[in-house]
Image (cartoon, rainbow, N blue to C red; front, side, top):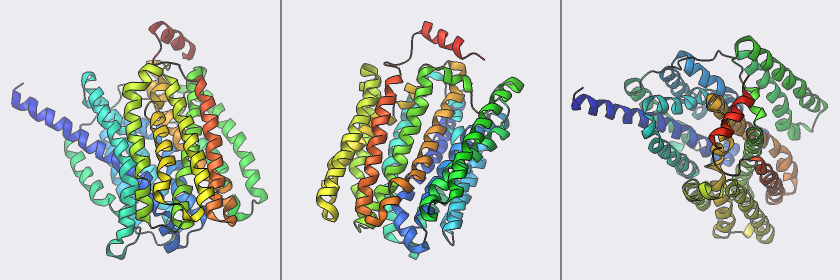
Length: 483
């Protein structure tokens, strides 16, 4: 092969990487960009508080329940094909969000956006894995980690600027419409530069399992989110109670699916690995904490304190910077030396930051300034950075290699479900106390955050003390989870 051909192939690989990472950034930004515009959306559309919850929870729920199936579809029908379908659908859903005529249409469009993201996002790491050799993946995944940090920083700022600028009199709508040129460019370049790939032996789809778990989650989350606004009616409690037997039916069907074709939606044998089972609890709890905090935080600043979107976005900059810095230090320096204690230190640091925030909010009331919030936000951001970067690797460190794919998908799904559950619990943690004023309700919600972080700290004791286990231990675990 000539050097010219080799260089062209190499350039093609990096262009493909740029395309899939840009698509991933678009999803990451979209998750964070919406929160900062919530008060503006409420003011213009007349959305109720429960509808505001569904604008974010609908996305998280659709994304979560579709992630594993989205990955399977890519393995079966081709990752490039599903990536292009996902990015095209995500772009179209973004247009519908930007053109929404009311809160109900916006919620429905956000659910569609989450579902299409579930087709797009799982293909990104799979395409990277099939495009780059093992010796280059470390560098590539390092770049991917930096992209995650960029998304966390860029989302709130971009959302604040687009809302504040009121481009063409469109108000909050450009936070969604900005995805159109990016998505269309990604679609065109993806067609040209991303190569097709499939799994050598793909598992079959589990649509019945997906339907059962979706029904169970909706039966739990819908009355939890609507309950406060509806006055906690009897049907809500009956639905929440009914979600338990539906979830039990899902678990029973998954066991049948294992015996029938070995292609369950959830690999139940993974839960025999103690660190993985505990790690799922850690991911769920962490997602709940984040789901509660980020929604009520922006409502507190903009509705409770009357700040503009730009001021609220700039106030969050210390948090974003602290997340990025701590994440880099955590993975490169601290976790290899101190193991799980780094994650526990992160949970403790976040709890201290939330307590400082509680004290400042109670002391200063509505006179609190942005610079006074810097200390608790740096503490919370630094703690989050210590957790978010190494958490997935810690949870997966004792999982045998042959189950790594399904385990990784389940970990990501669990965190998204936690976010959706946290947004639902905001009805109790925040909106249930809002009659006493949003500043007071924010303090009430922060106590929920602190409680979640204490639980998170305790659950982390079940994570591996250090990194990956020795080869002998890995072989023992491999035998344990064999089906």
